[in-house]
Length: 327
Ligand code: SF4
Ligand code: MG
Image 1 (cartoon, helix red, strand yellow):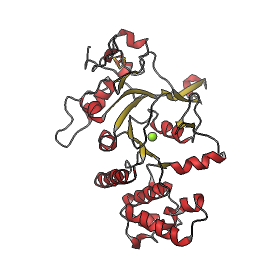
Image 2 (cartoon, helix red, strand yellow):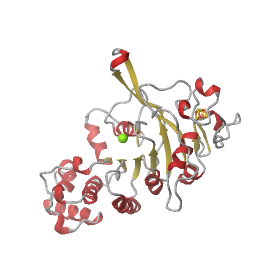
Image 3 (spheres, rainbow, N blue to C red):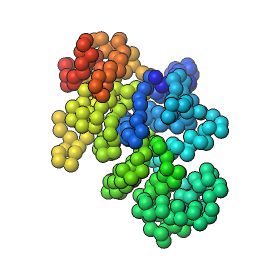
Image 4 (cartoon, rainbow, N blue to C red):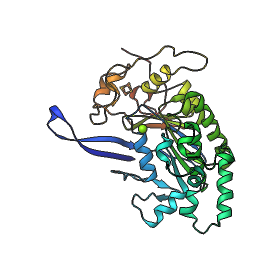
């Protein structure tokens, strides 16, 4: 179980009392070869920290990340670079990920310079051109600079560069959130196509249920640094077990209907520095009962489903949806 805690100093009334930000707390999941795992939750739920942990960009406070059986190094040892080829990252902001002073074709070919310094120039050129074509960029755009392209085109450049070395894992943190909704669909379709063609696995992070739904083979829902639910997209979005997922799903409009029977969550948005006792969701949970205030529900797994809620678990280990509201 993976955890990443940060010591923080709280301002103001708490007089700088040291506290712990539990960005990720006891998270545990597997990602199979070629699988796309969707990670969904509100901002501050630990999604991005999970991405950094997976890539070895931050060391875990406890627990371990393993890739293809071996621990992911968090310092820049020799094996770090070898692993970098196999795991690539796509961020939310393509402009921030690109160099404003370099034409895009040079940036798409950059991984070859770093990892394959002996590659002959003509081959490098050919490969960069093929990558551009594979993400739907035109040959005449090769000499363009990032600011000359649209947001969607820039994200295509980032994707092409991420795929240059044929990675086995892509970690995508809100890859389309910065794009217009009309462009989001195009980029998601492109990512689906590329995935079908190249077979990469992906950790696909988004606060947006419909984005996750389109991409994921399996979905993990996080709340305050923990996994609260896991299952197939149809299960999670049609028959959510956890009251938090039920609220998320109820608030998401679909093409065929507006948000219906919307469950409005009371209380403050989650604060990872001040995690409530018992079930961390209890102050906002419409179904909470007395024991939720003191007893932390464990994540119980059964037949590919998992849920961390007292009311969604039977004593026999069977899982069923928590009642929508008992209050
Ligand atoms: Fe709600 Fe209790 Fe379930 Fe937590 S354990 S989600 S508070 S019902
Ligand atoms: Mg984030």
